Image (tube, rainbow, N blue to C red; front, side, top):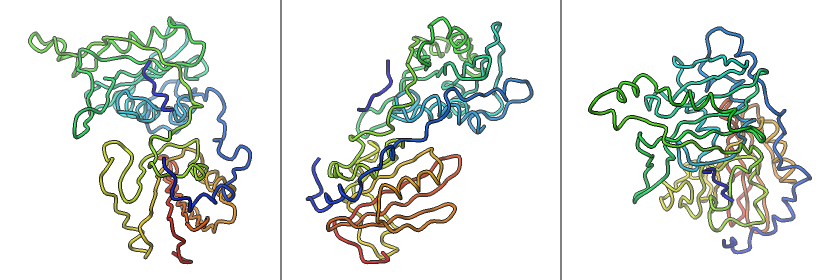
Length: 345
């Protein structure tokens, strides 16, 4: 199984007083629980299908299925949710297949890859996701500089993500779907000269969906990030970038490269010593309220789409910038300074 269970120095001690400031209330870092098995019944009744990756009910059902779990399939160490949505992002090739037992298969592909990467949702009679099939190349980062490398077409993999208790035989429709090549790949496979290099499902793997997994791990943070300030990083979120002393620590493709924060310079602040950018799929109001509870005593400014929390701890300061981006989630920027910032900065 290839799901990644991604399971320091202190900042000179100047920020450790935050342990008292950031005492999380019970359950403060837990994402709001979603109803089990959100239904896609509205898509089972016939009629044209939308672009699956953009349909709100599909995005909600897939988030319920995957949560913030990560893995390396079509991308290296990326949210499974993001990889699944990209694999069903083609509008014209969204298909609905009604199976003999009443279950249905909703499928599409990533057209930018001619369907080399494609996904399908196996739904029960109520429209709940039983399993998600992802045709992929077990992509990973290799070389110097790091670059994405995927299995060649003849070594494609079908990964079947499934709920606990599903029997292997129940996924048979996904195997049949995966072996039906998209038009461009079918042409290559049928060519006498190029056919040997065509896509083939060389292996099938079964991975238990674990939506309760946290969305980030300590390895993605700057080495100097203080343990006392971990409550500022919501457990149910995913790290997009992180940096320390003006140098990126994550993602790996940016690690060691210089980071410039134009906003700090424009607003007259000294460069931040540590920064972590996150994404949450909780509602904007929920995220703001959780930070308000976490950072008691912080100064809060907010409107309908953005919020700022500014606070001091020990000899240092912090700022949390929260931005609502709609379907792309809530962006959270956590910045730390070893010195206290002047009021209004």
